Every structure is written in structure tokens, then in C-alpha cells.
Image (cartoon, rainbow, N blue to C red):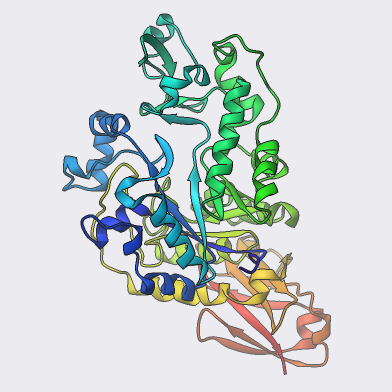
Length: 499
């Protein structure tokens, strides 16, 4: 296969829900050729099949009995039945493909079919914790964080009792430092040398079966975060010397020694994106951009997009994923579309979720095997069809991106603060220039364009996202800039053609 472009496009799919909608007993072999052809035709490079790994009855039982989670399911799927509750795919019992989906052989066949179309397969890796019934609870209980009766009495949401052979142990649930533990999981101890070696081996085994992984809550393994979360509780239970060296650099290097072009995507928050990029991840979640767009404020978004391109190139940019509400629910349509332009026409990995293109509004819980039926939103589908066509352009996949300066259209006109403009060059074909008025009132500005070669020419600005087009004098564009007078939440992606 050819190398991925500098700025690839990823499509996230909930595997269990997708197979359930094909029909009872459907496996990965039942994903049709036409379905794969459509994903390739839309321009996707990477397909994330969420939740392919084997889960167990212990996690499913927790999912079916946790009162807080049950209330969430009822909101997501009002006609839910108990058999719809399948358990979280992040409570991994074993890194083998779920027997319900056809096992490892079916995954290998799907991957081959994807490769025939230039598609890459991305899977989950859950480094922080395992399922309650993972085999290590019996063979290697020292891989987990141990607690005491006092810990269990004081924090029953963070600890549980596990029978390991003839021993009754109190082990920690997986968690981050700001929330109670996930009750369907057990926390791995990254200060234990043998655990670290075992997890590196698991990661390499996973990498042998796909083209990339999304590492769940990757920042929890950073040494300072781990120690802050667990303190002395993370001293190895077998009294082996504790290890505090970074885990990710060596683990990711081991993967790349076997698979040099392997894609490594980190779920990360708390402004630790750059740290994980430096430790070897190809891309890191860009929650800061998402939050700025959700707040509907241009200033924080423009400030974030002013970061060095060396950082932005490795950001994974999204408007929704399985952890967030649906974009069509969060953003009104007039805000959704300019937010999408700012998300997907800037540098980095373009991250979309199945159902986003059709305007789905109902969140689908990862604990459920079914979701609400929803009608397609034709306007949303039309918008995303145009946007995906733009994302196929070589300038947007491989070109050089830069943020442009916007000046007030006249003294005292503060609406300039709501404008964000940028462009892509070079590459085959015309240069591209995007302008977004991310504000709730009409606004005006001048955009400074770095197009000195347009002097003495007539210039056609053709909007690729609408039928609009404008003719301007190149001398004026170079000397004064491009004058914009745009409605609230307006957006353009101009093809700049010298005539």
C-alpha cells in the first residue's frame, strides 16, 4: 500500500452495532464489498473498528446492574431490553477478536479486503486497565494495584474484592485521578516491570493484526500522572523494584521496529497532547479545538490555530466521537457547518464518526448493541458530501497550511474578531483559501493574502462549498486584501484561480 497522506481522514464505526444492523449472527465477513467501496469512494483513509476484542461475562454483568449506567442507557435507547446490554468494549478480557464477530480469521479477511481498496484498519488498545475476568487475575495478580480492607471500606467505588485462585484480593478499579473508578475494570500497575513488558508484548501483538491503534486514555500512563493518581498504592505487591521511566517511548518504538508506518492515535486530555506527541504518537486528540467550537467563540479557536504547525500536524480533529454527544445535537446547523470547516480543513487527522454524515442526533452507548433508528438529514448529508470532496484535494491532504491575518474593514469595526481565515498551498491545481465568520451577527474584514503572483491579473474566487463565485483584481487583493462581508456563521472555501 502507498503511504498515508500527511493529513488522512478517519472514520469511526461501532462494530457491534453495525453488525447487529446487518442481521442476527452477522460477522465481519458480512460487511459487504459495496460498503467498503463506499468508504473508499468517500475518501476515507483509515477505518476505526471500535470494540472488536473479546469481552467477558463479568463486564457485561456490571453493565447490566450499574444504576447510573442504566439511567444513561434508557436515555440513549428508550425501548432498551436487557439483551441489548452487551458490556463495554473497553473492558477487554483478551486481545483476540470477539467470537461473535468471527474471530481473528474474519478480521484478517476484512483487513485484506480493506487493503485492496487502500483502506487501513485501526483497532483499540486499552493500556490502563483490563476486564474483571482477564486471565491475569489468576495467573499474574501482581500486575494489578492491590489495596486493603481499609481502602475498600473507605472508597468502595474504587476498589473491589477478587478471588484469585485460593486468595481473596482487594484490587483497584481502573480510573483517572478526577473521577471514580470504572467498576467493570481492574487497574494495571505501570510501576511493575513485568507488567510493562507484558503490555508492550500485547501492543506488538495487536499491531501485527492491524495498521494502527487508538490508545484509550493514553495520558494515564505518563509517570507523573500515574504517581499522582495512585501514590504508594502503586508500589508493586510482590516488592519488586518500582519502575518510573516513561512507558510509551519504548513501547511505540517496539511497534515501529516491526511496522514503520504504523498509525498511533492517543486519546489525551489536560493539555498533555504535546507530551505524548514527543513520546512517539502520530496523532493526539484535539479536545481544545472542539471545546472552543462548542463555546461558539472565534477568539479561542483562532488562538489555538495559531499554535506551531509542527504541533497541529499531529492533532486529531473531531466534532464528535463515542464519548461526546452527536455534533448534530451539540451544534445548531448554522454553527455546525462552519465548525466543520474549521475542524476538517485545518492540519491534522480528520476524525469523523459513522452517522455524522447523515446528521444522527442520538448518542449510542458503547455498552449497548443497538441504537435508535433515525431518519437521514438531507441538508447535513449534502454538506458533508461537498466537504469530503474538498478533503480529497491534494493541497488539503499534502499541502502547506497557514493562518491568515484579518484586519478591520474600517476603524472601530470589531466584527473582525469573529473571522478566521487560512489557506493551503502548494500542490497541483489552484490554491485554496478558507474564510469563516464564526459569530452570531453580520461581520466585515479584510484578509491579508500571501499571493504576490496575482499582481496584474484578474482572479476568480470560486466557492467549493456553494455556488458562489467572485471576480477580483489581483492588484487589489495583494495590496488591500480580500474584503469580506459575511452573514452570521458564514463560511467559504475558495479556489483561487488567476485568469
